[in-house]
Image (cartoon, rainbow, N blue to C red; front, side, top):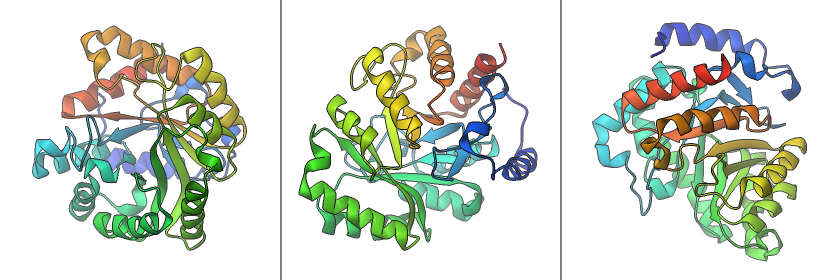
Amino acid sequence: MRDINRRDFMKFSAAAAAGAAFPVAAQEPAARLTAQTIRTLGNTGIQCSLLGQGTGMRGWNGGSDMTRLGRNEFVKLLEYGHDNGITFYDLADMYGSHSYLGEAMKRSIKREDIMILTKTISRDPNLVRADLERFRQEIDTDYIDIVMIHCITDPEWTEKPVYQASLEVMHEAKAQGKIRAVGCSCHNFDSLKRAAISPDIDVILARYNPFGIKMDDTVENVTPVLRQAHEAGKGILGMKIVGEGELTRTPDKISESVKFVLDSGFVDAFTVGFTAQSEIDDMITRIDSATHA
């Protein structure tokens, strides 16, 4: 377990913020990374900790393993992550996790200290517009750092008028300062390839691990697409690093997956879902071990 408390973390955050003017290429080399290292997402200017706290393991229909912990336990878990240097929170309407982070911010987490990502499953522009307003109310924030179109499976989605109209609504909200970046998560390889070259997408949340577990395609096929997107200036966030929990049966493979993702050179940060404080401690230790070997 890393010996870091909130006071130490705030000192670390202030020091990291002093370097915010440096370009993406100036990010620290892998040998110096920690879970708390502040990373810049592509060319967006948005920054967050390398490790993000997910809220949607087995998330569907407004609930997840995290929300099923109960309100007090889940909020305490969000606070624990922040006390240990996590500044990236991965939410979604589908997970029903908005109000939990909102409550954590009322208790102890300062809005300006964190990066909030959330997702909409709406495909109609009017529904997307309504979602953006509702999400801000549920989280109780004036702005959301990243809003994504969630779980895209249409292989030709960027050519469809309904998606184009929805993206226009999101970029309008970006121009108004209601969101800072527009993103997507894909569950189809052709959809991912479209996202990688779309000028409307600032950030991609991608399923990535060395074993191909729950990914859009093979590692060999997905890797060059994500690298292409990152080289084009898009922020790349990784998910399914632990294979939605599958790798917990073989813990050594968790460390292998963490090192693989960190060594990729194009994953800016990644999110992992935790249901216990010990899991946060374990992942922080694995990141430290992977980057200081």
